[in-house]
Length: 91
Image 1 (cartoon, rainbow, N blue to C red):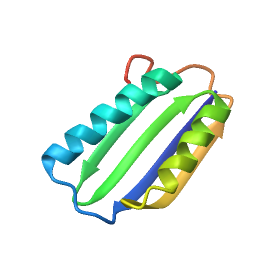
Image 2: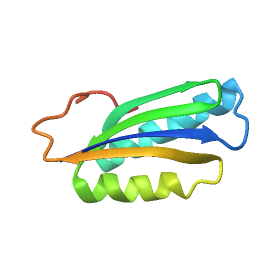
Image 3: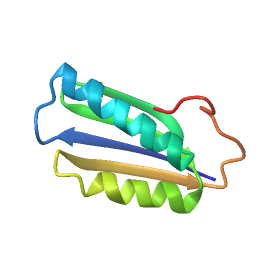
């Protein structure tokens, strides 16, 4: 199991409705992928914690990093997570 944390800066301003829609879509996709975690947004910056199978989280991070709406600044990960920290959090 992999845990991953990234910080990114928005490249396109998000309003509240766009943030709610983004979180909803991501939560649905994460549930389908078996990924759990946490998303925080403030002042144009995202912080997200993801956890799940190594390949799944790696593929998801590649997709996030290629999204032109934001610029990933920091990316930390660890493998061999003994158990999920947010087992019931889809986003």
